[in-house]
Length: 375
Image 1 (cartoon, rainbow, N blue to C red):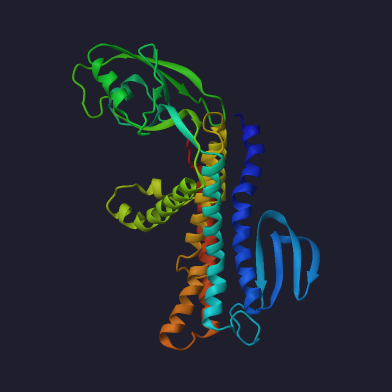
Image 2: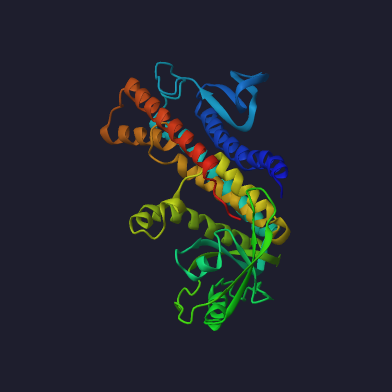
């Protein structure tokens, strides 16, 4: 896929992945706020600046905005309880419900998307190739000229596409064995290599004679990933799809809970755990769509479900300005029996918003200068 095609595909991927997630999030806030009797001044589709005022129903103005992603809800007095119909003037249970409704809608959407993915789009991988993601210095691979990003397509002149067993396990054993068997002999690797970002991969042949003594655990000295190159449709019953979606939901939530311990124990690197912003999410989505000839739409739709769940979890973090930070103030109020001064709460959320915008800008820059590459 060339650069122009990637750019053309990127915008709709951006809108498809992030637009509905933000929209349903704000819709959750909106519906529960209306239910609670809070005055909702505006429900905007898309993000400002405003394009046009669509209509007004009751006291709520409905608008269409220029940035075609998500939505927003503007309620009266989010930190000012002076108006009896403001958000801040409501009982704790209603403020909690309105705040939690956004993440809950993301969880619900994620579960529905995952269920649909398994019901209508599920595929089962049948073959894979090895893709190099790291080369150890002074290793056999470095001597041969292997580079990160290379995809191994042939070894010693023979195609090296590996079948996936019935247990769906992916293993490096086949590559390890053929390298060990070639110890002390001439050795040839044929790899697919991208000459530059956005250009089509080209076949490159690497030749050399292997040392007689090789590390039996890592004879080439590379770290690898697996790229699925063939798959077949797989049928799920409704019950199986629901159970698979629940398992994915638990996997995402469990991964976020385990993340701090995994980082402290160095089981995963900071690079692997780095947050991604809209550009990073879009790049990953585009990469998954580029694999649709071999895996269909299943990975992309499943990824959309994961992102929806992650958006809900992120918003529940106890960080000022996020839903979780505002929920934390409600819980503190319940524990201490009296409310934190609204002006102080507004100040805390303002500082939190400034920090979040700074962090978002840093993530955006990182996504541009060091994009995550799944290919």
